Length: 85
Length: 94
Image (tube, rainbow over all chains, first blue to last red; front, side):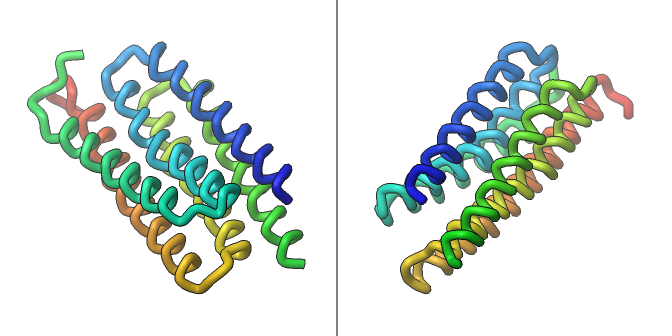
């Protein structure tokens, strides 16, 4: 079961890295803000799987902080002025 | 039995996250890419959390995981809406 969890964690990490390539490529700034969505879901999933692998409860609190930071970053971006590219 | 169902849920969740990443690359428009992330990634995340809840060692951990899932749902919905709003009105018109 640990091996399965490690494979899932590795797969999530690969997905995260591949998504970051899209963040690099993306023509508009909204494409780049998609990174917060990525880290908010896939990143948090990765952290939760690692918390289960290590049987460490504080790592789940780290996941909580990640979610809140992702939400705050997007709210800060979304309430700025008009987009300039 | 518990491990088997947790494994099925985790693998299904990972498959949906993979589908979301493929959509992130293949969709032509920023709004459709938001669709791929806000829906497929969240579904995959929910399934992964369900698999971890099955594996949880105490009810307190399970409740905490469910609360994290609810928070991720709220945060990603808000984020997706805000990004889409910016993308739609970036040139002054829809």
